[in-house]
Length: 534
Image (cartoon, rainbow, N blue to C red; front, side):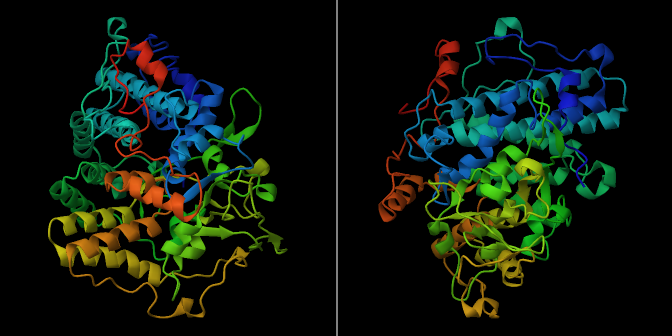
């Protein structure tokens, strides 16, 4: 079920934020606390991640969901030609300039959302239309969403090596404050995110306490899971282990029995889901067409042709060879869609064709594939976006426990994830896999065996491997490589191995971070400083 979903109507009803330049234009249409409607305001905060008062910013919002894949060794930009999303092509070659439109849209949209949340929090602090306990929960929900927005841009624009964080805007700005908020340092920004999530954790209920018609709201476990991720990115292994343990010990979540269930549309908000953004179909503002706001990012990765996608973020051979091949890993079936596969969802086989001239390895992401039987008109899809799931928490726990010297506990968490993979089906009911020859031993009992590495370094490498194959295509790979301190070496090696420009120009100390949009630097009279090297 998808109850907390996108709604253009809600955005228009609230009319919260309409700003062209987030540091120099006053907010317009702020919520009036005299007639504040708490429930609509909080629902509108969820909807902020899908909608915007500028038509084409709805389109641009999907970029953040693909950058972690496209900038890594897991996927090519893809598409039909160089003119298909050229801004992302420039980014994957690490030729990015501060004027890059994709860089600008991701940065500005997330601050747009933050302004939205600040306005909602101001209204909630004075609201009298709900009980104190409900208002307290609503504040927790909005603080969680604000922390998530900051986390998204901090992972992309923060610079650990140069101690650069982000401008922290935690209230509705006065006119006198416009253009006068500088960047905080690296840990101050992360500590703001952490404190927001701790506040949310204290206010939010557990997932099982919500009624069925409230599925999709932020929960205590979601705050704890994002705290785990925050500590992972700041290398605070003690707290990373502690917060992952909170999620695990809550018994609110478990691995789905089958790997395929994680991405099945009828299993959304399922047992493994800790937090996901729920999408539905709505009128695309100003056009008269029906579009899912998720369709922009999910359809972008669908095959072209019959599926109505754009063939972007095509998976790489390098990712495929990372999976264990002999015997095979069943997750291959549910991660990759191959050229030549037959879609049998309507009873008559339709061959999945190669999509686009910049997708050299001719593969797409099965996790986001809509078979013809389920595909909405014009290639639309209402796939939810999974922000964080239980397998990720188990692997973060494994990594932290290993760094803390708890080898046995780390192995156990890692092998829990591998056991699910080992026991998963490798038969896709919607297609015949023709584009890949599986080893005859795919169904061997010893496939995806338990890891027995007994030293910290070997186990760390095993956990990093598992993150890559388990979470492939889920927008984490590039950011994982950065925090692991090996983005440059991995991407330059990729470029050399496959004779491609992708990753070749990566410069250590520079390309771990995106540039701050140049016009934001200019609008602040350089109070917002640029990232190193740009």
